[in-house]
Figure 1 (tube, rainbow, N blue to C red):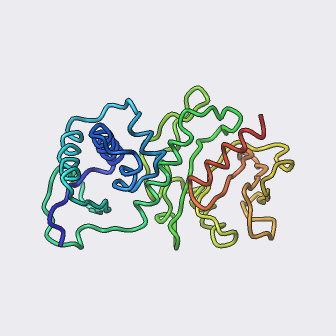
Figure 2 (cartoon, one colour):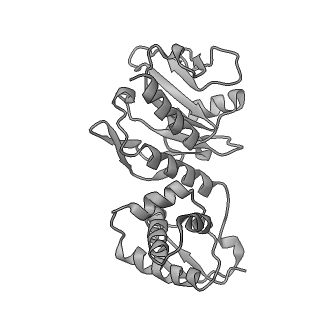
Amino acid sequence: MVEEAYLIGGDNTINFKKAIARILYTNGIDQLKISEILNLSQPMVSNYCNSNDKIPIEIDIIAKQITNKIINGQKLSFQTCINFSDKKYEGKYYIATKQELISDENSKIFNNLTEAFFILKGKNISNLIPEIKINIAMAKENAENSNDVAAFLNGLIIADDKITGHNGIRFGESKHLSKLLLDLKDKIRINAIMNIAYLKNINNSNFTVGYLSKDYKLKNNHKKFDILQHSGDFGIEPCSYVLGKNAIDVVNKILKIKEEIK
């Protein structure tokens, strides 16, 4: 049975972990230990600790309560709580049954997409930006439909040719990327995809390149691709799709592509 749980609205989850990381760090706990406590990578913890982003007061208060418990030797675990109410739940609640806290791969996908965003944040990707919105989608292992695929709500925010922010991560978003990812997932063993501008002369790179038909069907029979090219159609912009085992894998390929096509 869960004895005590702090429920934080999904939009505040990043601020919540960021606040805990900062407080632990100022209390002399090293970043490797913090990464273990918060189930984050060390680069992500470093990003959080060095961030100047302002934390909402109500989140900071809860974070201080929790860090006091951690410092005093109490263990914690982060789990996903799913509710179907329009009411906004925030603050401290006592949970009667363990079934009310649901832990699944959703939280891992959210963390992976979040870390992928921070890897790209602030990077100049001017030669990779398409006319349409740019996004990253990542699917559950046994995804069946678009509700099993998460992406950034309304795409990634770009300013001055740099990715600067996003409006949250949701399942069931980015219908086009979700459908394409689901169509490709079992054929070429990928779990994530990102759309970028059409890449010219990419065949000379070290990446494995494949091609999509006008109706987005795979033309090649290979089992592994890093990039798929779509030449566009009437009213459809030519586009390239970078593929990977997860969102972090995809954005690391994006940075390599950026260097190759300078």
